[in-house]
Image 1 (tube, one colour):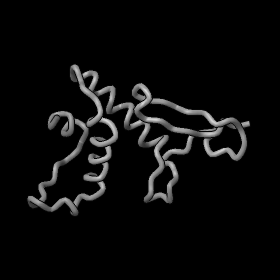
Image 2: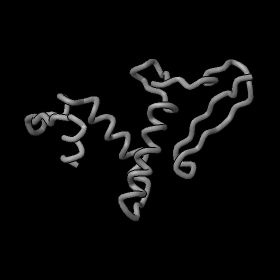
Image 3: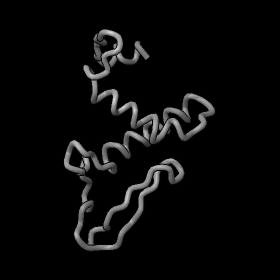
Length: 105
């Protein structure tokens, strides 16, 4: 993991122990990842874990409402948010993650 981070140009920063509020946004993201995805599954190898995290990240950025953004999506896809049209459900990870939206008319 450290090699991957270094290769990506990420520089680690040490924080004092017991100070999660110094990185509250990261802590909240990992709490959401664990409670909404990782804590509900059993993994049979690294690839299944990586696939689950990829699917969760796609859901998190494109389909999950965020309170800090006034319950809007981070990345608004074309056709999402239409006022009229049939309601559709997008499932990820076997139905564990769901997103409902209106199809553009």
